[in-house]
Image (cartoon, rainbow, N blue to C red):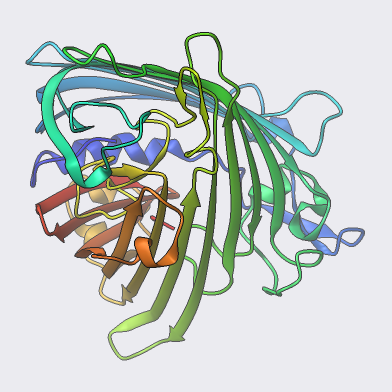
Length: 424
């Protein structure tokens, strides 16, 4: 997503984001065989619904921008949706995005299929280059990365094939696993949470004017193992989430092969109600990643990914006080903590525009992050001169979509973000 300047037509963007709900209705019936809640999925209960929203905003890289989005809910299947976004800016930049989410094929009740296509042209894109060279040779580290503003052409294509294991809440099938948790949270994946395996073929490109010598393409396969044991993905108060992701580009005559892995663990603790708040929540997250092929070398160079596909910190999720992909290298570590509060006072339903939509809660959040990127996978190197972020944010559930606005402070300045979904 884009870094948004403060106070730029947040209501318009909110109207766009609220349309992204792809979950099935929360209407449930008992399922004794699975001993969990299973949704009633009668197609006659769900009519396709199309929403189109125009918007306007301003960013550091795009200047004044206009565009629109269209979403088709229940697009042929109860749980599926289609999304299209297009925008054009004053400086002749443009972006397109197409997505198809959570489709099933006949008889494959444990699978969900999604696809994404993105392409963007930025006339004044902000990028970070390691001493004028890509990280494919022995030498420059992320600490020497130079901030450059240049024309960039970017794209990616992703096909997600998600298999939901028949354990815990996945016992009733993949569609049922999209529902909020209706039972207790246990620390046994056979009884609790949703365990899944996701395969994702991907193609990603980035071409920068004046830096044509940099690697410009990645093609490969990503494998993700995930156990989502949160009580509620939108507003977690108990449980946690564990994920392990492997990415592999097998290379070609004009492209290096490489491998990365990423591990992430989150945990949530609800502290209960107080006089002014419905709940106080401590949210913790740990992230670590490495490129095991980093020091492997063949005649045509090192087996390292381009910076846009490799291990990075910075952006709207990881180290939010810095620009996207600000730091990159072989490995990374990141610690995150948030103190989330749900006020009992809820004035939003009485405000113009907001009163047209269902906003069951809003949330205040304070957060701190500390992380580092290094060119070797060693704990002492990863914990040298940790980069930090402090910040605060306000989050809303708008028509079943979490919209978050955040101001984050880092050593290089401030970042203001507008984004969907919780950071973890």
